[in-house]
Length: 179
Image 1 (cartoon, rainbow, N blue to C red):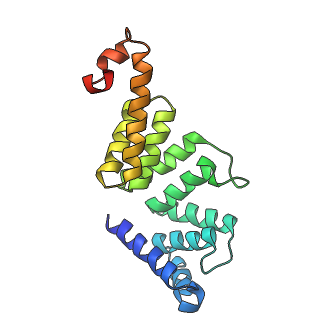
Image 2 (spheres, rainbow, N blue to C red):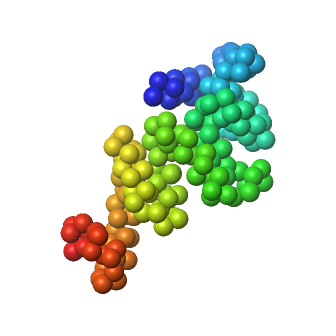
Image 3 (tube, helix red, strand yellow):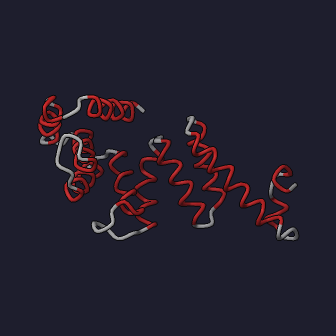
């Protein structure tokens, strides 16, 4: 959690600094990145990804995210997962398996948005129990979109199960969903 708080703080600093280059943040990140500081490398990746304080360059962003992830930064793993989940068009091929693998690293570290995404990826695969569990973890951190997604997934499960009332799935659902 401390890592996530530090990451959020650095992103906020980049956003409020206007031009990060002028404020000295980007050169500081570059110096730290040379020492293999995974958080600094992740934030450099975000600067390249968003074009904040550096020219937008998705190739450099992906390279930075890969290096930071290899050094253990869970937010960098999350961003790589996002690239495999569709943000990386032209850089990586869509690969739901890799998206799940990378996003799971950040979800296990407690990143609420990653928990939500992992829940959605599991639900897409038909593993509703695992999907709902991850959505619940995310929602319990106050991530309201996860709560709405969880409700939607539960409603869809209930609707499907009600259409198959004789199925074991229907009887396994809580009464509140069956009615």
